[in-house]
Image (cartoon, rainbow, N blue to C red; front, side, top):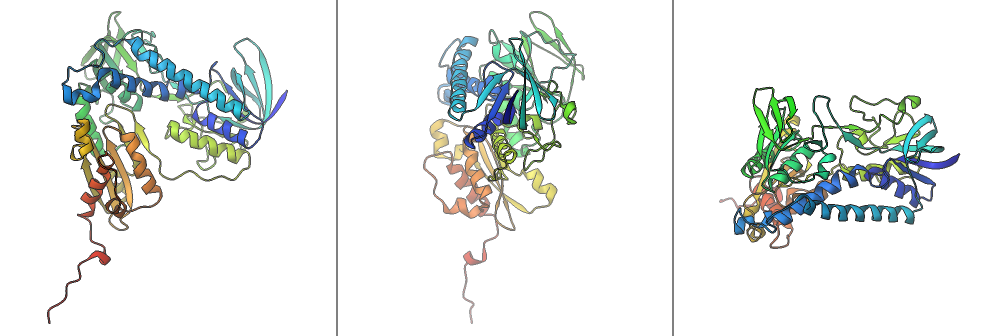
Length: 474
């Protein structure tokens, strides 16, 4: 029986950051992962693979250059599945190697196997070799992430009807693709493969999609992806999915049919908690297998058990999971630490990218906050012309009362990088004046902040100190 200060179940972004933090605090820490390689879903089937795939698609297809050279322009004429996967495997190998190096440097122990609780401070780990061992710890962190939701009425076969984990192993690029679920994962893959000139149909049972994004941005995004060739079907759920061998036939509840060579089912994920035996702790999960925690400490209802990452639900981002893991480890090991910043960016790595930070216009309206809007189009910037950008916009929201930035939304090239300027100003409680006063590199897309700032500034009430004082005639 081996005793640890902290045992972490899962080596994704939350588990990794928690383990390294515990190692730097010179505590005895163990990371258990069911895979034979570290990194979790983020490294192997989620964040890193999908973003690597996106970059490969945009590079090989010549997508970014088509506004100059025409829609028929290609960097590589015949793009095959192996072209996509070769870069993917190289990136994943680097990520795993880097993670192993970080763990070794910080004296983090690792173990491959399935863990389950058998007592308040004791777990049992079953390895692939068939061995079973028991371990104890003062504190535990559950960071098992999520797994794909696979409804029984969808005939998954791992080849033509797949989930988002299996999709990365595709043997060949299909000529046509049905994507079910217009969430972040579905939208990313749908737009990515549309850039490869695959005929894509994106199906979402609700009338709207990505509801946490500002509606102005969604309207712009919808126009762009439809213009790029995505057939977006909103407002009708799937009635039946038929695997017809050479193609997949989907019948919608409204009676319409959709046919394609492949179907990707990306409608939701559930917490990977079913094998943990949480009942022995008296710890419950919701209907999607997620664990409720105190959002300041990531402590569960059982004081010595913590949870972080996608397994606790919203916002389910790799970036926020890293922060959650660090805070959870510090709190579990009784070490004071800086709290998380109130505002963090969302990034959707679709084609085009979408990123937001702060409140949307709809949220401001619901709260009754008086505001002004500033908008800039990427084509208004010199850098946008140099890059050949025909689309893309940046939208900023400012309080009329305090002049503070309340939210920023971006759609277009580099959105996920540009958003960090907004994040810094938001967290430092900056105002519209910052964007008017400051100089941005020229030519850059970041100059759009200056344009949008001036757009709002010119329509907002003039501060008293800047009003022109005219002399009254006697």
